[in-house]
Image (cartoon, rainbow over all chains, first blue to last red; front, top):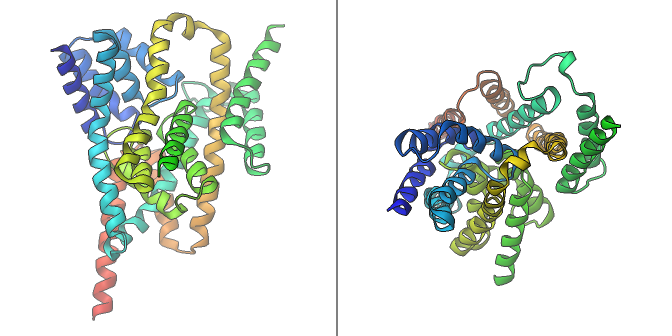
Length: 188
Length: 185
């Protein structure tokens, strides 16, 4: 019974969270805390923190975390399947329509207008991440909050990516290691 | 086909395991992997697929791998790439939830993750720079207006991305109808 409830709840979360990432949070909150009382608000906050510190979408992370807590590994599997199932069906149908009908002038017109907006939205996400990285979690842009070491790491990373054409994942890991070394030096 | 599926699984698994910082990061990494490195799809197709992933419900990372999987290997591709994408967070969250208190309090792990934020920012900036150059090369003033307007709406006014996608789509429909009408006259 709990497995079925987990599946149904996360199916709804997967179906109605448009916009990705944080768009899923209010839905998770209403299903998991308010409706079913599977976790409390403190655990929910912990869950968001875990999601920020680990790879993977918040919705998938929550499904695994809550499923595990409520019904062990089977719960985690059922909840995770529930959260991705709506995407699998809807996105596959849209991809089919796109690949089949993209020569149509109407669809082409729509996509031409969408492309610049997609570039802008990716840019926005990048800017938000940089503001957090440079000025801390609150994102208050002021000189006294500026973390000089992070700016230097960013500039070096950008140089490695754009001029040296290095592997992005390697560059990201190097940035993390650089910060650990700076932290180590600050302890001495 | 079998070789391609294995490659697809390994690629999505690898990308998903290293993607800190939300859906757009994995989309940019997918672009580097599938467009620049493997040449399985071209850049315009990638942007269209991102638009589909973005305007559908669910996580962008999952949606992105569904469209790519479908484009590259059909339905088997969808299944393989979805499993590849959800397996790393599934395993990691399972492990982390057992050691959560220790993990969150460790200053070395905190420093590592903080440094990686700067790296993630640099990856996105370099990809957006490439894409913007492609956009500017078209010399289409309307595209530039859309790009700037979408940025202002999204960043300054926190407008929901669903509305931005719907508005741009609506504009595309109207523009196409207007163009075909004018040709017909």
